[in-house]
Amino acid sequence: MPRTSVVCNFLVELPIFLLFGTTFKGAIDDVDVILEILKDCGYSQDRFYIHCDAALCGLMTPFINNMISFKKPIGSVTISGHKFLGCPMPCGVQITRKSYINNLSTNVEYIASMDATISGSRNGLTPIFLWYSLSAKGQFGLQKDVKKCLENAKYLKDRLQQAGISVMVNELSIIVVLERPRDHEFVRRWQLSCVKDMAHVIVMPGITREMLDNFISELVQQRKQWYKDGKAEAPCVADDIGAQNCACSYHKIDYISS
Ligand SMILES: Cc1ncc(COP(=O)(O)O)c(C=O)c1O
Image 1 (tube, rainbow, N blue to C red):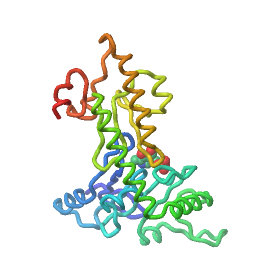
Image 2 (cartoon, rainbow, N blue to C red):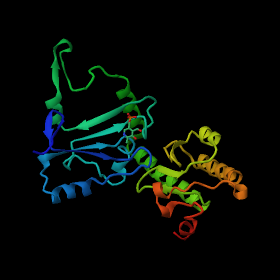
Image 3 (cartoon, rainbow, N blue to C red):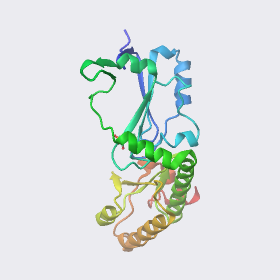
Image 4 (tube, protein in one colour):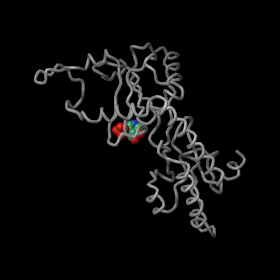
């Protein structure tokens, strides 16, 4: 017997969770490739359920490649409102098919209403913030933000690369992953998020070229101090971001020629 899971009150043989922007490196799953694999493996649409976690990139993909679409056999999408859109408090939306909502909804007699949420009560103000941000920016505003962020992420990556600093950006991502700056105070002041020997910069709509230039020039200057006299070396991050993106003393030669 195949194992099954319950999704939206349905028994599903194969629940699949796709990511549109992994938390640290911003990797984006390719729905079309996954669907092709499922087809090749003989999975009909009633045997799988696809959830798209698009917390960061849900508002970007429509302007990049229209990857997420309910014309495809996906079950649901979640998007955070406080990330790319910049709402001032945590909020988000889940979009799913009516059939699933109907299946989940219960009639709550004492409020004389249907309810499909896990916890029942919810913040009524955040949808207004979402609505306001979406209408203030509009489709063209969002499109402009997406273009600017992708260009700025590429700019930051190129500049760091030119300075001989390990750096990697996943395809269509605005998350720039770089070697972890050696000094804790530098990390704290720039509010960098770090994992192992990596740090990342999420190039959001509010980030300007001037901020990036300041960041780069300060990092370059500080690195000269941290690594002078050869007492310490920049970390090797080949295992985490690929040897071709690593500028440590061992991988430097490949890095410069790539
Ligand atoms: C991939 C991914 N999913 C979900 C979340 C959580 O989103 P939220 O802050 O809306 O709860 C994050 C947050 O960083 C994330 O990176």
